[in-house]
Image (cartoon, rainbow, N blue to C red; front, side, top):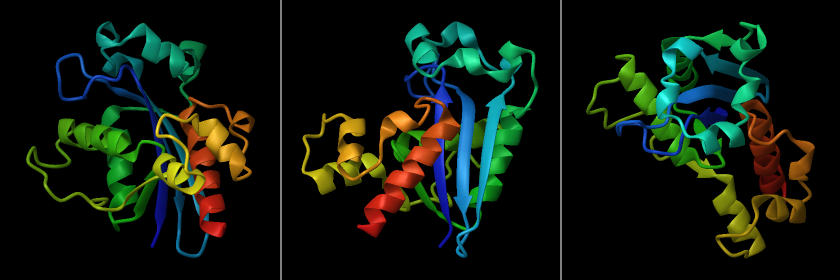
Length: 188
């Protein structure tokens, strides 16, 4: 079964369908095929499609919004929200395993983006990743017998994955971290 390691950076933490809800501004995916080949995707939604008046300063600071290519005179990996949603339709069409640090949140946001772009109906009950969400944080808690509020970096260190080696809160770096934690947990 193919695997997609997914992470997003968003403009707030408020549910996306609520007024002023979070919007995806960075989407990153590593797709692993059955034969082990991997392809990384890193996309930034165009600034003119984001309603930053509803964002929270804390969310933008934590996610390091200042890295957005358009804020740095670049259009590399910048796309429309529709193009980001279409990419996710393509990458999840064959029902891969979806692995993340908060996969239910990311899956909800991606589904919302698909809906906004008329790629799924409003009442979409069946999505390609249904029942195939794997949370590495939950797996780390179970493996390390840590408290649910334990530090993720401290838990991953106990299995040999140093979180400080990754540029955390950069969606692409986070997908590599998630992949490495997942692979380490599966190997041990």
